[in-house]
Image (cartoon, rainbow over all chains, first blue to last red; front, side):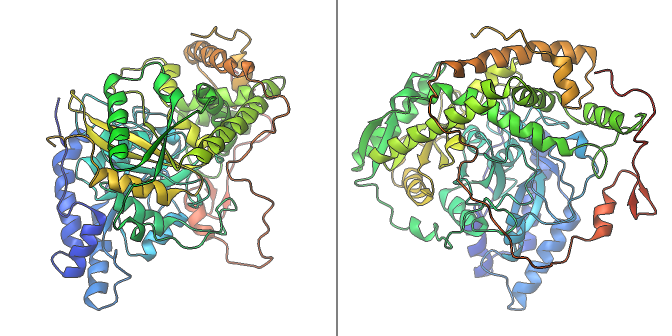
Amino acid sequence: MANFVAKPAPATLHAAADALAAGTTSSRQLAHDLLERYRVVDGTIHGFLRVDEAAILAQADAADARRAAGKALGRFDGVPIAIKDNISIDGQPCTCASKLLEGYTAAYDATVIARLREAGFVFFGQTNMDEFAMGSSTEHSAWFPTCNPWNTDCVPGGSSGGSAAVVASGQALGALGSDTGGSIRQPAGFCGIVGLKPTYGRVSRFGLVAFASSLDQIGPLTHDVRDAALLLDLIGGHDPNDSTSLDLPATDFEAALGNVDVKGLRIGLPREYMEVEGLSDEVRQAVEQTRDAFAKAGATIVEVSLPRTKYAVATYYVIATAEASSNLARFDGIRYGRRAKDATNLLDTYFKSREQGFGDEVKRRILLGTYVLSSGYYDAYYLRAQKVRTLIRQDFRAAFEQCDAILGPVAPTTAFRSGEFTDPLQMYLADIYTIPVNLAGNCAISVPVGVASSGLPLSVQLIGDALGESTILRAAQWLTTTGSPMPAGDA
Amino acid sequence: MATPAHDVDIAHTALLARLELTDAEKSAMQHEIEDIVGYVRLLQEVDVDGVEPTAHAAPVHNVFRKDASAPSMAHERMMDNAPDTIDDELIKVPVVLGGDEPGSA
């Protein structure tokens, strides 16, 4: 085992912005330091799919020139950020870690990228992921698996495992990922960093390669809660190019983090969460110690019930795969992406291009989604799952009548070992704590609270109501600063 | 563990999904999809009488954009991603009718 946990200096996006403002560093220096770190550790971690050094330095130099001329685009002009490989950056490859999109170059910026570009961010590499964001371990990348920086024999989680690993290993100050069933929160939890899944509709999905459109959200993976808040302030908001994005006033979640206090905050503990089969003792204790820390600081602990928790994974794997089978129908080898060379006609081109381009997990999910939508099965599987989804939403509605935030595990265990799951269904079942949030459409944050006896990070999840980001960000800020429930790890 | 579902026709499903699977893939997928579908049948025990389906997490109504013209994305940038073109102007596609019968699926 090797351990590559490190924080770069400056360690966070806000610290880098402060250092640039103070003139104690330059964008080129920040990029240079991260490139140095990348060269030392990424041969072992494999968190990045691509790091285009020339493009990075050109962006950094442009930012430095703007700042020197007194024309900085704002506080973050020149700050580097890593991007998951399913988010379009104009002129950069965007492969979703799939052979099907090998050679594809994005011809436009995703809305989140356009917003970060306007703020002056430097795009520092594309991060590895499970192919088309389908997986919980980043072992399903078509190129190579990513390792957990805390223990390279373990997975970093997924599907945003590359984003989590590059932040945790000090190769990035922060990153963007996407979360369809836990793909930001679970890797953040496994890698001991902060990961936020915003409320559905808070962040535009324009330019994010679609997996399951009614569940997907883009969000931050960061070293601290403040960076998660400020990134959400920057990337959130209505976008005419995504009709599901909500028309909301501009936010300042970062400012709301000053002077946090949890007195009177009602923290809900779902009794079903502690009864999940396979929940490890240490994860249970981390949740209990966090509960006790909140209680000691004057929060009210309320037992709540989410009775349909046991149906969430089944509901998700019907709905998400159904949507995926439809979304991934666009990859036909005609207008872009891989086209099979040995096909005899148009239909054969579809069959062969998709056979050659997609990996096993993607094929499995397309088949499952096609099956549950096919004639004779639609009502029994897809329509029924949509109805159970309504009940899961109602469970959360009822729980949030009694509490302001829900506390629970991120996953039943800490990071598992590479190759540990050979049965796909067993890996799906480990998503029990993250999936319900996507089905209900509310927000949640994964927060590191300690280190397990194995040396791997222990994290908890705070779930908020729809548009309840301020509440969970403030609680998470308190938890990671004044309220830390457990002794800090030696990393 | 749930009982696997034995009514999954993987060859037919693969045909619908436009996936040409190898024989080895077909046999592995048959087994895995049966297991997952068997598990998903857990949903049959939920009482959903009178429950409306949820298609989207944030209920949205029909959204109209302004009826205004705007520049399209650059044609030549789009064509750069095409696997095969005629003079970088048109996407060249394989023969549509005829040729050998498609896929073994």
